[in-house]
Structures are given as structure tokens and as C-alpha cells.
Length: 122
Image (tube, rainbow, N blue to C red):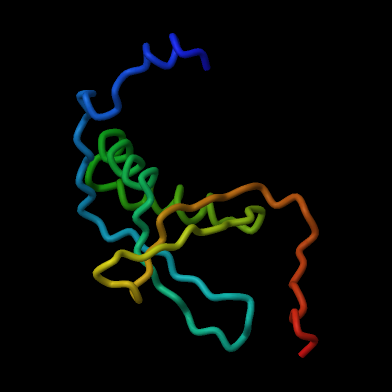
């Protein structure tokens, strides 16, 4: 990018931004690792896209169907067997041992499923 083009960019902090829409639902994912001894993990989903989906579906379907639309999008379609789902997990400083799902990345599963053996030959 040239210096002139750089100077023409808007100041990120001087822009008028729309306020984030509050999502009154506690969006969560429950999952287990492939290990049979793994207990079920249940984490809150704080993904920006999920919040935007809530607003869109609320306007499109109304209060009565918004939960069904979210479930269909964020569980049935995104976590379908033909998808490889990856979560970005994080915590906040005041609760460093409490984790939450910050983002969901899902791609179509196009590779043969493989479970990694132990790194240490156990």
C-alpha cells in the first residue's frame, strides 16, 4: 500500500459504529474428545457470527422460531458429519480457568478421518 493510500484510510477509532446487538440466549456447545474416557465439555459460545445470526433470524422468523433456526444453523448444519469443526477457545483475565468458545471454524470434510497415535508410543 502506498503512503498516499495509507493516509486516505479512515481512522478506526473515529468511525461511527453500530452498537452490538444483545443476545438474550446462552448459546452453548457440548462436546467430547475422541478419547473414550473424556467427560462431556459444555462451553458458552461467544462467536460474533452467532450473535449476528440471532439478530438476523429474530427479524426473519420472529421470537417463536429463532431458537429453531439457530439450532439448525449452528448445530445441524455446522456440526454435521460431513464437516470438520474446529473451535477457538479462550478465557478472560478475571476467570483464567473458565474457558469459552470464541469462534467456530467449519470446513467440508474432504480427507480420510485419522486419529493420531500417541506422540510417545504409549
